[in-house]
Image (cartoon, rainbow, N blue to C red; front, side, top):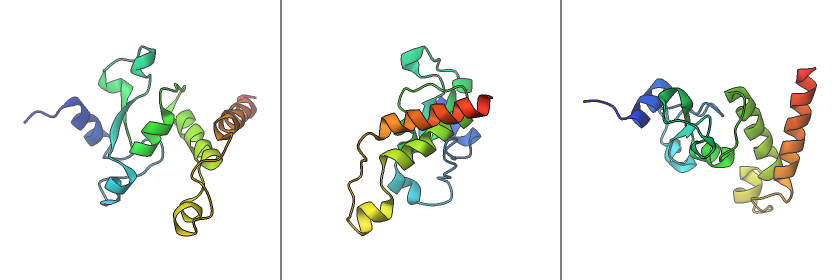
Length: 125
């Protein structure tokens, strides 16, 4: 039986999110974190193709947070997503266990871009 394009991408990437490294084939936790998606490195909204080379495996949260942002590399997108999580979302413990925080930090998106651009500027020198 021939695999669909999405199945080919998920198999190629071993059901592992290229952005955060989460592997959905090792545990049922994938269902708790959101299904795995096929993300376009160059978003379709910005002219990206449906070619398999433009597609990667992403967990639900990474795919959602990345949205239609475009990065020069997977590593750049991973860095931005790491900063985004730190700046925009409280930890799981603070939010759900202790109940002491909201899930969203005000102004986090702008801080994410500020930190990302600063890091990229420092590494370019």
